[in-house]
Length: 548
Image (cartoon, rainbow, N blue to C red; front, side, top):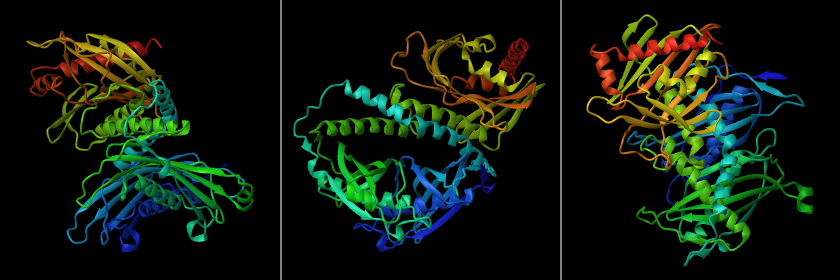
């Protein structure tokens, strides 16, 4: 197996001026053209790292936040975040700049997966990406979490579909049929549509898909639809110069001001074309809005499925929307999620849990505020947010510290702030939900928490073990009048191996009102609660570790 790759990874920046030929009737950059540019930049980044030709395997959900207009400048930055043997995750950031005002806005942030194409019959194993900055380390760590979401997506979707099938049949007055929204288009792949190996550019296929989906949506809204997001492009197989590509689009469902259009792409070579033997090479689901001349969102009519396949697509659109809304809620830190812990949320809650702790740990300018033997206390201020870091030197192997700290039923043995702790739900081997109670502070009720604990083992020795903690909502565990329901925004441990018999344990906490009194007392010197708890933690770990 040949190992290939530039150690520093791929990093590509492309700038394009939006000309009338790139724009739609409103003078805005066509989404299809933008998808072609994004794929080209990402492919160049992948090939820069791999040193060989690469092909698009998939592109994660894409959200379009801003529109670029004729005369403005589009900048596309693509970077390989992590290499997984023969595939890579490439991060893509698109911004638009107005040349007159010099104002720059984010158009989209996306993640794509590319596969290195071997030369001849041999296999290629990619070199790891060399991490040069804090952002490189962050994206490298979170790439693993995003990969978990990709791999688990189909199972989450199937679970939601099973739930939808139990809810009964569709009944709604004034709903319209989607039969008229069926659109079919054929494209012949010519040399300008392909790379130097003759494979069709993924971005070109995405652009054709956007065109046919837009026509389908327009037949329902009788207006000009605007692409707002794409639910993961996944390439099931290649197509080459000379292939005939058949694009089939139809509206799956509508949601007041948005519509989902499903597109299936089939490929035929000359022989397959004559025998009508199609190769399914791609499917995707595109979400459109429609606006009037004033830029106001238009409402789409409700649709009714008229066939068994139509009902499948109708329910599938609902399941994908639930996943999409869960992701938007969990990955946006603008609001606390109101949905309970359910199948559509799980992957994104876990991701946001690990991501929040990883981002907190990577922040610069932590200030040391106290030391005691093997303990250091740090604080970090950012606006009105205060965070705490406690660093402890522990004389046991890192894997043992991880095992003991990730099981929160042990927490009462060293942390006096934990009165009781019970497992409510073992989501999987890496995630558990706990119910925790804490003793009352003077003049207040005792507090309780419902928390998710996510644990991750390192993929290589230089990475830490991670135990991330955040509050979640469970409908089966509502607030009780006996307790003051409190919240953990972001907390947890990172554990680094120092040697075969010692490690560094770092505890982080984004301070909430419940923690503030303890921290304030520590900072003013009137209490040693944090140091005392850290000493008890070290004592517990070393005592337990000595028995293994």
